[in-house]
Length: 327
Image (cartoon, rainbow, N blue to C red; front, side):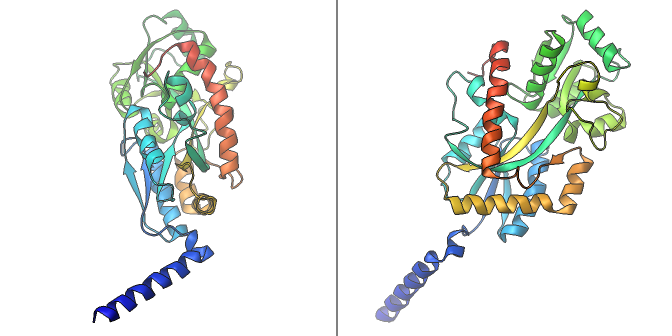
């Protein structure tokens, strides 16, 4: 009996080795894939990630679950991704915050370019300039005049240092040459609650989360932050057409895996990303929220690597000018 079991075990090992040599199997990580969202459930990144996971699951033929690991503006979750085994089992989705880590920390917890392998860009998410419902300005021009005249009294709410709302606020204040009182929150949802209640004055938030409040009239909206108008928000003009020269800010999301992940695995995940983005139902859901899915060429490792370098160079001077560090 023992010898029979031993022969069966050896046979199983041999079959396993043969399968491991197969090119197809080598590109297919066994078991479950975890897509780490470094923010709380229900937020903009989480909404995008859950739809993306569904599309990637269909392409990969594997279970793709979403796990929320929030903290420190997303760095806690991305540290979890960085420390995971480099086998394609753990993927991270992060927004523009990935590009500001080197400038926001005196001692950065990771290097975005050296500690991760890029999978591909996912989307560009326009943002909206919104204010409390009783903000005394009928237009963006009026709002600018009011901000400049009352700069010492105005509170700007954001979701913490390095968040998309924080970065948009930095760019807005720099463009308008005003310095407002910045009020950080742990999440943009909490900031929006206080904005709707009139406890803070103004913020900049993604179409994904701010859009429904604009539509319902719970907040005032003054424009979109991208250079072009946004589908679903055509009633709001870009700030660049309202006197703010060259203003073009969007939140963008991308996928990353731990450094050293085999290139065939990275390519397989990138291919699944492109398949998910091409899904008409997913694209329609994103468009309804004002999200702009990127092209197949942009959803690639090389394109993401190039964009990340550009964004690091773009945001570093503005953040350092602000003089606020997380550590």
